[in-house]
Length: 182
Image 1: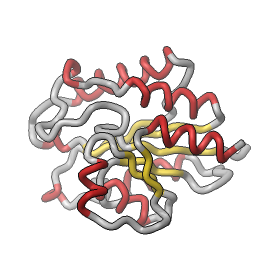
Image 2 (image 1 turned 90 degrees about the vertical axis):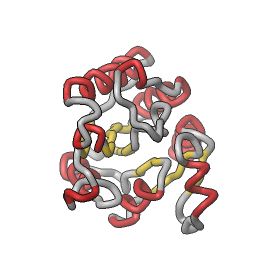
Image 3 (image 1 turned 60 degrees about the horizontal axis):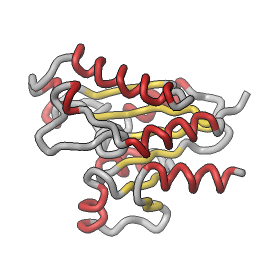
């Protein structure tokens, strides 16, 4: 069976971002339209995966249990809207760790793609930063930038390749993809 896949960055795409890190469950605040967008994509036949840099763990700002509680809340909010998040991967490392998973390296995206091998079309990656887009570009994956989170700042500071689509938010991307797909 062939599948369709959308991979999402988390902070700034699904939830509000902070330059000071999202350190507690109380600081993890969903963007309501993003939760609905994930549910819409899921109900529209897409598998949903999340690939998120979480160096706050490596910095000691929060622990794995706190991260898991944030992800559980995200999963539950999406399920309440009738959708599903199929996979979540994260990188706890710092830049100095030189791992293969921390975006802009594509390791997390490769890990997800290895699990979803029956793709009907190339997977999409949606992010709000240059690091996100670079990970997708490294794999020639269709990439979209959302203006939420760091997205507008990213758009203001770099020239994107014409192939990179720009959307107001995840809901805008979801509408585009579902309308293009039908």
